[in-house]
Length: 433
Image (cartoon, rainbow, N blue to C red; front, side, top):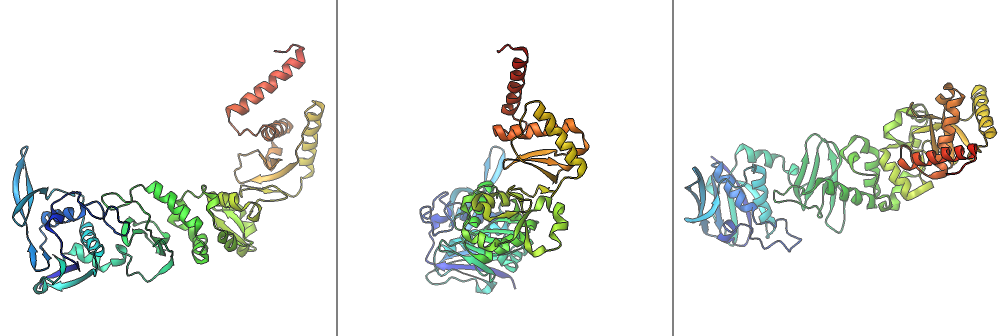
């Protein structure tokens, strides 16, 4: 015997719900799931187009759906008729519609009413119910898959809730897939993306296909939502898994001021290590792994913005704050100290005063020869294999970065050096431009 999906709700649906495209009484009601006024029509079109047997009862009255062929510009369309009355709707509507969309729309309409219920019944039990609207449609393999994997589509029965708030937002444990729900209904699904959490969020904006309207904006708002959370369990779980999950791709470099103070409490005294160059620090980490926490560099950047010196980042040594991209070397070798003294002596004789402390470092990127940071000149240990002229050049460049505040490869920095060179020429010839 055939099996049917039964979806019921309190109240009696009007025939106009199937014929007036764009007609919805839910647009101004934020408690409702649907509001476009098209989903139910698309669902009926999909059922008719795929020749799936279905019945709709408005209490004891059955609403009957048939089709009528209608030619249009050398093509033929099947026009939908409701209770024998021809509409302007055709079965071609919602060309990309799927079984999941159809079940979702009908069930969401039921949820927006009252006493909503979904079940599987035998064909003989497809009967009207007093004071209720009831949909029955044949349980094909397409629908069976949805019913068997209910939590993949609806959050209502999930038992793994981690967090909820007064604004009807829920956070569930993640897994091998990324799932985003809006008011209990799936609106985003990434099959190949592991996630720390699955999310049911009331503020998500959807389009007429009931999927996320703007993925970039959604990620922006989700990052803000997570930064503001004050739940220790959520923050701890995120920090301990983020390097391997979808959440790593959120734009963590922004919104540093959004972080709740609980983030700092959870991090505690751990030293943060940028994920992107954690291998550079492997020898340091392995001796005391529980003293370190590896996170995406852009997240560390925004945490530093919020908590300043309360956040310790590997590479922060003697007042020089790093991003894990260099390691300060405690002392110069005799050869390095000799070459540095020679370079500084040359600059002094040339009346160029070096006014900032110099530190020897190992950079994660071997091509970096120097860096200006926190009023300190950082010189690469590899620079001292390139000769005194190169050492002098790097010292001048990094000091001028500190003096001017201009970055590398900027027009302003180039102009600064050109003007400095012209001034030296003016002094040499005794003529001023």
